[in-house]
Length: 256
Length: 367
Ligand SMILES: Nc1ncnc2c1ncn2[C@@H]1O[C@H](COP(=O)(O)OP(=O)(O)OP(=O)(O)O)[C@@H](O)[C@H]1O
Ligand SMILES: [Mg+2]
Image (cartoon, rainbow over all chains, first blue to last red; front, side, top):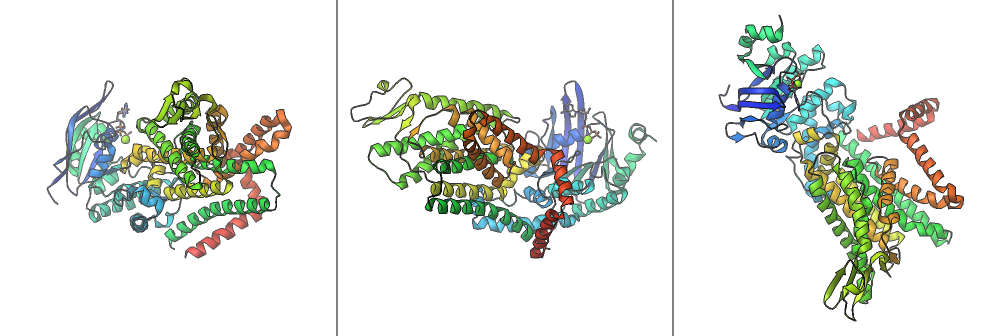
C-alpha cells in the first residue's frame, strides 16, 4: 500500500446553535485505503461528510486533499471538481430521469460542450454524447444495472438505488469516494455483493474510500482502518481489529 | 439490445409527433383558407395561437423543465413587443418597410427580453428558495406600468425620452413620437402572419427540444430533481437555472414581436401584458403537463379557442371556461382518476393491446 496521505482533516469543528455536532475531529486516510467511520445515531458522521463536501462550513479546522489542496472554504461544486464525490444517507437520485441519464449527468464535467453546440447539434455534441452513452453504460455494468438503464430511477428497488448513487458518484472520477451507509436497506446477499463491488471499484478506479456504516459485518469485512465517533468526538481510531477490541468502543457503540 | 438506439427512437418519435402536429394543423388551415372556408373569428385567432403556443412552450422550460416558478412571463413578452415595435414603427416613419425588418425586429425582441431575463435572473437565481415567483410577479407589473408611462420620440438629434407628455419630449418639427404614453404605439406595420407564426413556433420548439436532450438540458433537469445531488456532481445551480430562464425570457420576447406586429395599435393593458396574462400562460403549462412540449401547444390552442367559441353564452362564458379547466385538471392529475383510467384500460383490452403492439414494435426495432 502507498503511504501517500490522500485526505487529512485537522481539528475540524462545527456547532449548530449550542450543539457541538463535531468537535476537534482529526483524520488521515492513505491513498487507496478503505476507511470506515462508525458510531451511534447522531454521533456526527453525516455532518462530517457534509463538511468534507462543502455543504456545511466548519466553525474551525482544515481539510486537505492529497496534501496540497485545501478543501475548506470551497463550495460543493469546486470540491467535486477537485476530486471528492459522495452518496447520501437518504437517497438523492434524479428521480424523474432514467438510470442511464443519472450517470450521464455525472459525466458532464468530463465531456463538456457548450449550450450552443447542444442546440445546434454541432459535431462536438454527437461525439461527446456517444462517448457519454458508452461510459455511463460501462459504469452501470460494474453495478449490474445495465438491464435497468432505461428505467426511471425512482422506480428502481431500494438496493439498486443505492448502487446507482455509487455509480453516479464514481462517474465524476473522484480521488476520494464518500459512502454514507451504502448497505442500509439491503439484504444479506445484496450486502455481500456490495462489499465485493466496493473492493472492486477501489482497485479498478484506484480510489480512496471513506464509508459510514452500521452493518458491522461489512465494516469488519472491508475496512482497513476505522474511526469511531461518539457525540461529535473521536472515541477510537486505528486498525479495524484493534479498534473493535477497544473497551470504550464496545461500551458506547457495540453494546456487548 | 441497443439501449441508446431505443432511447433515441423513443425521443425521435415524440419529437416527430410534435412537428407533425404543427405541420398538419398548418396544412389544414391553409387548405381551408384557400377554399375560403375559414370564419373571420378563426382567422383572427391564427396568429394568437402561435403567440400563445410560443409563450406556453417557453414558460414550460422554466416551470416544467427547470422547476422554477415564474409569474411574469407576460412582462418579457411586453419587453419584446415594445422594443421591436419602436424599431419597425420608426423605420416605417422613415419610409423603410419590408419583411427583412421583421426578422431584425424578432432579433431585437429576443435580445432585449433575454437581457431583461438575465438582469432579473442574476440576483434572484443565486438565492435558494422560491424568490423567482415574487420577483417576476413584480417585474411583470412594473414593466406594464412603465410601458404605459413612457413617451419616446426621435428627431435628427436622436432619441428623446420623457415620462410626462409629448410636449416634454421637445422634438424638432422633423421629429416623430413613437410611444405616446398610455396610448402606446399606433400604426405598427402588420408583418405577422400565420405562416411566420408557425415558422417561429417550429424554431422555438426545436431549440427547446434540442436543449432538453443535451448536456445543458440534463443539468437543468438534474437541478430540478435534486439540487443537493446535482451540486454534488459539480453542476452550478445559478448557471444552469439562469440559462433556462434567459432562453425562456428571450422566447417570450419573440412571442411579443409576433403579437405587436399583428395589431395596428400596441398598448400595455392588464389583459395582454399584465398579471392576468402571465397566469393564463401558466394555466396552459399546467394543463398541458409539466415538461410536456406537445401538451403546452395543445393547451394554448384549445384554451385560446374556447373562450371565443363560448362568446355566445356571454355571462356564462367564464363560468364554463373555469369548469372546463377544473375537469381537465381532474382528468389529468387526480390520483383517483388515474386509477379509474387503469380500470378502464383493463376492462377494454383494446387500449392496452394498442400500447403493447407499439411497444413490441419498439423493442424489435431496437434489437
Ligand atoms: N443542519 C443542522 N442543524 C442543526 N443540527 C444538525 C444539523 N445537521 C445535523 N445536526 C445535528 O448534529 C448531530 C449529528 O447528526 P448527524 O446527521 O451527523 O448524525 P449521524 O452520525 O450521521 O447519525 P445517523 O447514524 O443517525 O445517520 C445530530 O444531533 C443532528 O441533530
Ligand atoms: Mg448519518
